[in-house]
Structure formats: C-alpha cells, structure tokens
Length: 375
Ligand code: GMT
Image (cartoon, rainbow, N blue to C red; front, top):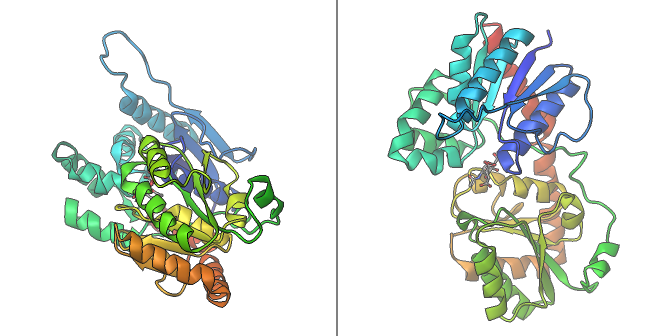
C-alpha cells in the first residue's frame, strides 16, 4: 500500500529543511505520494517528480492583523490539502509552529490523518528553554501521534527540558549518497590558490554564535603554525564580522578563504582533508555526515548528537567545547599521519554506508508510518 504523505518544514536553507526535503524525495522514489506544504518551495526540490506536489501557504495581509497569521494560514492549508488529497500522514519537521499547526489541522479534517513530528534540535534546546513556549512545545509533542528526534541525545534533552508524557524514537539524519561522495575535482585546489602539498581544513555552518566559528579560526591558527594549510570557511551569518576580524588579528588572511554560501559542497569536501565542527549546541550535525560521505574525517565537540555521529578515535575525534589546543593537537596528529588519515577516512565512509545509510533511515520512517496507519 502506497501512502499519501504531507510534509511541512522550514523551506529556507537549514538542516531540518534539508532532511525533510530529502526524505520526501526518497519516499517519492519508493512510490509514495508526497505533498510539501510550506511557505515557499523547499530549496533542495530542484527536479521534477510526478508524485511530489508543492502547496504554498499564502498569508492574508488583512489590515486588522498586527502580525500576518502564518501559523493559522499553515494549519488551514494543511487541513485543506489533507481533506482534498486524503492524506494518511502529515509529517511536521520542527516542533514550533509546525507540530502545533499539524494538530490543529488534524482536528479540522474528518478522516483520520496521523501527525508525525520530528524534533531537530533548536526547537528543543533553544525554544524549549523559553518559559513562554515550553508548554506549547510539550503540547505539540504529546498530541502528535508519533514523535522522532534526530539523535538519542536530543531524545534525552527533550525529556530533561520538557518532560513530555510521550515516547520519542531516535531516527538519525541521512544524506543522499548519490550527491555526497568524493569527486575528482583536484584541479579546484589550484583554482583556489591552494598548493598541492597544503592540507585543507573545512568548516560549513550558518555562522551563528552556537557554532563557535571563532574556535575554528583559533584551532586553525595552531594547525597553520605547524603545517602548510588553508582553512575554507563556507556559509554566512551573524558572526561573520567577528570571525573576519579575528582572522585579521591572527594575521591569517592569506590562509583563510571565505567562500560564502555554496550549493555544491561535495566538491569542496572533495578537496578537503579535515572537517571541524566545534559547536556548543548541535543535536546532530548534518554537515558531519556530508563530509564523512565524501571521505573527510571530522573533529567535533562533546555535545548533543556529535559523539553519536563521530566515533572518537575511529572516524575522527571528540574534544571538549572551547578546548582549541586539544582540537588542534588532534588535527595535527591526523593530518601528519597518512595511514591514520586513510583508516579514519575508510571508517567514516563505512559509518555513512551502514549506520546512517539513507535506505535504512527512510525505511525506519516508512515502518513508523505504516504502524500508525494500519493501527
Ligand atoms: O542550527 C542549525 O544548524 C540549523 C538547524 C535547523 O533547524 O535546520 O539545525 C538543526 O537540525 C539539523 C537537522 O536535523 C541538525 O543537523 C543540527 O544539528 C541542528 N542544529 C542544532 O541543534 C544547533
């Protein structure tokens, strides 16, 4: 039996939107009918699929509204699509407002539609700390028919911070292996002015404070003293000014390349030797998986879901938050030892191909949907 599934996510750039869109695409490839319901077309939805539909939420700008009521417009659109298309499932990504909107929509629909909510991280670890939202998030979780979270750590944090009376299942994130793999683009090194023998360290993020990009620069400064190297900083965000100032202060302008937001990051990983993610909050760290799939070992911090993605001393290293000396020492150890680098590269590829393989994760979601629909 093929299912009709509505998916609501943040359509703009961001890990939760990426995972939701990739899930929709792979479910469509398995024959299910997918209806994206969101404010704009999910940015990864670049190809035509005959069984994927997009329903845009249009917000009424009526003058009596001080704030345009997006949440109500979304709930109403979810209900409209669910009724017309006879959806079996609405899968909402991110608790606020999506899960709550899904629950409202469910009540407006006459047939039985099941709400699945996936928690992605900041919806719990940041918004869950706001007393004005905590009970609403708890409501969204408890009233969903099933709830998943992208790491065991996020499951634990949700119970700790919100205490919902609900079972939450861990379903790891995944990537499309057809997109993320090592590509033969070594010529790019020369095009970026990187010497053949230079080691390349990469960081990709939205440059928010939680990502501690200044720690990335400080770590790289230590690496750069010991090894001929370049740092690729990919992405943009609020911390960019502070980061570029630090690069100047440390006199690293010739060794740090600011690449801004980039689409084809598999090419950039393909010329990289090491990935750094030194965040203070991170429920999973999708960028780690992207790097690992391209054969790049990672160093990350001992927080959130990162230790579930990087296996310490096997696929990379785990360091304490803020300990840039330790991160740099591990990086140097790894970059100087070709055999160790090869072992960690192979172990990373194997983790992506087994523990985090898209086929496995998508079938976990499918099983959950069938369990709900078939009772
Ligand atoms: O802060 C971000 O990186 C964006 C955020 C999002 O909503 O897309 O990412 C969260 O969800 C991703 C997909 O599940 C996870 O890989 C990120 O670790 C998580 N971010 C945080 O927990 C800070």
